[in-house]
Amino acid sequence: MHEELRKFGRKLVESGLVSSHFGNISTRIGRKMLISRSGAMLDELDEASVVEVDLEKPSSLDIIASSEANVHRAIYKNTSALAIIHTHSPFAVVLSLLCGARGERKIVPVDTEGSYFLHEIPLVHGGAGTEELAKNLADALTEHKAAIAVGHGAFCIGKIVEEAFVVASMVEHSCKVKYFYDLQRSIGFRG
Image (cartoon, helix red, strand yellow):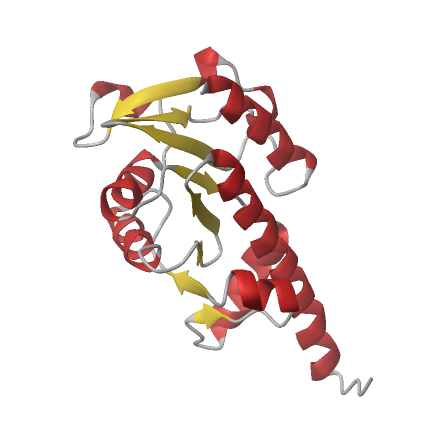
Protein backbone atom coordinates (compact mmCIF):
# COMPACT_ATOMS: atom_id res chain seq x y z
CA MET A 1 0.00 0.00 0.00
CA HIS A 2 2.91 2.36 0.73
CA GLU A 3 4.08 1.84 -2.86
CA GLU A 4 0.72 3.05 -4.22
CA LEU A 5 0.88 6.19 -2.09
CA ARG A 6 4.47 6.79 -3.22
CA LYS A 7 3.60 6.29 -6.90
CA PHE A 8 0.64 8.65 -6.87
CA GLY A 9 2.34 11.18 -4.59
CA ARG A 10 5.03 11.47 -7.25
CA LYS A 11 2.41 11.72 -10.02
CA LEU A 12 0.59 14.50 -8.14
CA VAL A 13 3.75 16.63 -8.00
CA GLU A 14 4.82 15.81 -11.56
CA SER A 15 1.41 16.80 -12.93
CA GLY A 16 1.36 20.10 -10.99
CA LEU A 17 -1.66 19.17 -8.86
CA VAL A 18 0.35 19.86 -5.70
CA SER A 19 3.68 21.38 -4.85
CA SER A 20 5.94 18.95 -3.07
CA HIS A 21 5.12 19.84 0.56
CA PHE A 22 1.41 20.64 0.18
CA GLY A 23 -1.62 18.44 -0.27
CA ASN A 24 -2.07 14.96 1.14
CA ILE A 25 -3.01 11.43 0.23
CA SER A 26 -4.55 8.53 2.13
CA THR A 27 -6.03 5.09 1.77
CA ARG A 28 -8.39 3.19 4.02
CA ILE A 29 -7.45 -0.25 5.30
CA GLY A 30 -10.21 -1.74 7.44
CA ARG A 31 -10.66 0.44 10.54
CA LYS A 32 -7.41 2.33 9.90
CA MET A 33 -6.04 4.70 7.29
CA LEU A 34 -2.59 5.31 5.94
CA ILE A 35 -2.06 9.05 5.45
CA SER A 36 0.88 11.21 4.47
CA ARG A 37 2.63 12.93 7.36
CA SER A 38 2.36 16.64 7.96
CA GLY A 39 4.88 18.42 5.74
CA ALA A 40 5.82 15.23 3.85
CA MET A 41 7.16 15.71 0.35
CA LEU A 42 4.58 13.87 -1.74
CA ASP A 43 7.07 13.14 -4.51
CA GLU A 44 9.39 11.44 -2.02
CA LEU A 45 6.98 9.44 0.15
CA ASP A 46 8.42 6.44 1.95
CA GLU A 47 7.29 4.34 4.89
CA ALA A 48 8.59 6.93 7.35
CA SER A 49 6.47 9.69 5.76
CA VAL A 50 3.20 7.76 5.99
CA VAL A 51 1.31 7.30 9.27
CA GLU A 52 -1.30 4.69 10.18
CA VAL A 53 -4.11 6.18 12.26
CA ASP A 54 -7.41 4.93 13.63
CA LEU A 55 -10.60 5.78 11.76
CA GLU A 56 -12.86 5.81 14.80
CA LYS A 57 -11.10 8.37 16.95
CA PRO A 58 -8.07 10.63 17.06
CA SER A 59 -4.89 9.15 18.48
CA SER A 60 -1.49 10.39 19.56
CA LEU A 61 -0.24 9.74 16.01
CA ASP A 62 -2.59 12.40 14.64
CA ILE A 63 -0.07 15.03 15.72
CA ILE A 64 2.41 13.84 13.07
CA ALA A 65 -0.18 12.90 10.46
CA SER A 66 -1.39 15.40 7.90
CA SER A 67 -3.19 18.37 9.43
CA GLU A 68 -6.18 17.19 7.38
CA ALA A 69 -6.32 13.76 9.11
CA ASN A 70 -9.63 14.63 10.75
CA VAL A 71 -11.05 15.61 7.34
CA HIS A 72 -9.97 12.30 5.79
CA ARG A 73 -11.40 10.47 8.83
CA ALA A 74 -14.81 12.18 8.41
CA ILE A 75 -14.89 11.42 4.69
CA TYR A 76 -14.08 7.73 5.26
CA LYS A 77 -16.67 7.44 8.01
CA ASN A 78 -19.46 9.02 5.93
CA THR A 79 -18.79 7.87 2.36
CA SER A 80 -17.81 4.73 0.48
CA ALA A 81 -14.35 6.16 -0.29
CA LEU A 82 -11.32 3.92 0.11
CA ALA A 83 -8.80 6.52 -1.11
CA ILE A 84 -8.59 10.31 -0.82
CA ILE A 85 -6.35 12.82 -2.54
CA HIS A 86 -6.28 16.47 -1.51
CA THR A 87 -4.67 18.80 -4.03
CA HIS A 88 -3.85 22.47 -4.07
CA SER A 89 -4.24 22.53 -7.85
CA PRO A 90 -4.06 26.13 -9.11
CA PHE A 91 -7.09 26.33 -11.39
CA ALA A 92 -9.34 24.58 -8.86
CA VAL A 93 -8.26 27.05 -6.18
CA VAL A 94 -8.60 30.13 -8.43
CA LEU A 95 -11.97 29.09 -9.83
CA SER A 96 -13.27 28.29 -6.34
CA LEU A 97 -12.33 31.81 -5.22
CA LEU A 98 -13.95 33.43 -8.27
CA CYS A 99 -17.13 31.35 -8.06
CA GLY A 100 -17.28 31.68 -4.28
CA ALA A 101 -17.01 35.48 -4.55
CA ARG A 102 -20.06 35.40 -6.84
CA GLY A 103 -21.96 33.34 -4.26
CA GLU A 104 -21.94 30.18 -6.38
CA ARG A 105 -22.12 26.90 -4.49
CA LYS A 106 -20.75 24.63 -7.21
CA ILE A 107 -18.67 24.56 -10.35
CA VAL A 108 -20.39 23.06 -13.37
CA PRO A 109 -17.82 21.85 -15.92
CA VAL A 110 -18.28 23.09 -19.48
CA ASP A 111 -16.07 20.47 -21.12
CA THR A 112 -17.63 17.22 -22.33
CA GLU A 113 -15.52 14.89 -20.19
CA GLY A 114 -15.96 16.95 -17.03
CA SER A 115 -19.70 17.23 -17.57
CA TYR A 116 -20.00 13.48 -18.05
CA PHE A 117 -17.51 12.37 -15.41
CA LEU A 118 -17.99 14.94 -12.63
CA HIS A 119 -21.40 16.52 -13.39
CA GLU A 120 -20.74 19.27 -10.87
CA ILE A 121 -18.17 20.03 -8.20
CA PRO A 122 -19.54 21.36 -4.89
CA LEU A 123 -17.77 24.30 -3.27
CA VAL A 124 -17.47 24.00 0.50
CA HIS A 125 -16.24 26.28 3.26
CA GLY A 126 -14.20 25.73 6.38
CA GLY A 127 -10.65 26.42 7.49
CA ALA A 128 -7.91 23.90 6.77
CA GLY A 129 -8.17 20.94 9.13
CA THR A 130 -11.27 22.24 10.95
CA GLU A 131 -14.29 20.20 11.99
CA GLU A 132 -16.42 22.56 9.85
CA LEU A 133 -14.42 21.59 6.77
CA ALA A 134 -14.52 17.90 7.70
CA LYS A 135 -18.32 17.94 8.01
CA ASN A 136 -18.89 19.99 4.86
CA LEU A 137 -16.63 17.78 2.75
CA ALA A 138 -18.06 14.53 4.14
CA ASP A 139 -21.56 15.79 3.28
CA ALA A 140 -20.57 16.91 -0.24
CA LEU A 141 -18.68 13.71 -1.03
CA THR A 142 -21.59 11.41 -0.21
CA GLU A 143 -22.92 12.15 -3.72
CA HIS A 144 -19.92 13.54 -5.60
CA LYS A 145 -16.46 12.29 -6.56
CA ALA A 146 -14.86 15.62 -5.69
CA ALA A 147 -15.48 18.85 -3.82
CA ILE A 148 -13.38 21.98 -3.57
CA ALA A 149 -12.69 23.77 -0.31
CA VAL A 150 -12.88 27.42 -1.37
CA GLY A 151 -9.40 28.91 -1.60
CA HIS A 152 -7.82 25.70 -0.36
CA GLY A 153 -8.11 22.94 -2.95
CA ALA A 154 -9.84 19.81 -4.19
CA PHE A 155 -10.66 16.70 -2.18
CA CYS A 156 -11.13 13.71 -4.49
CA ILE A 157 -12.24 10.19 -3.62
CA GLY A 158 -12.09 6.76 -5.19
CA LYS A 159 -12.20 3.04 -4.53
CA ILE A 160 -8.44 2.93 -5.13
CA VAL A 161 -5.73 5.61 -5.10
CA GLU A 162 -5.53 5.58 -8.90
CA GLU A 163 -9.23 6.44 -9.18
CA ALA A 164 -8.83 9.36 -6.75
CA PHE A 165 -5.89 10.55 -8.88
CA VAL A 166 -7.99 10.39 -12.06
CA VAL A 167 -10.70 12.44 -10.33
CA ALA A 168 -8.12 15.00 -9.14
CA SER A 169 -6.73 15.30 -12.67
CA MET A 170 -10.22 15.71 -14.12
CA VAL A 171 -11.14 18.40 -11.58
CA GLU A 172 -8.09 20.47 -12.48
CA HIS A 173 -8.64 19.98 -16.22
CA SER A 174 -12.31 21.01 -15.99
CA CYS A 175 -11.50 24.01 -13.81
CA LYS A 176 -8.80 25.14 -16.25
CA VAL A 177 -11.14 24.84 -19.24
CA LYS A 178 -13.93 26.67 -17.40
CA TYR A 179 -11.59 29.43 -16.24
CA PHE A 180 -10.50 30.22 -19.81
CA TYR A 181 -14.02 29.76 -21.19
CA ASP A 182 -15.47 32.20 -18.62
CA LEU A 183 -12.60 34.64 -19.26
CA GLN A 184 -13.29 34.68 -23.00
CA ARG A 185 -17.01 35.15 -22.44
CA SER A 186 -16.37 38.02 -20.02
CA ILE A 187 -14.38 39.96 -22.66
CA GLY A 188 -17.04 39.36 -25.30
CA PHE A 189 -15.35 36.71 -27.45
CA ARG A 190 -17.84 35.31 -29.94
CA GLY A 191 -16.07 32.36 -31.53
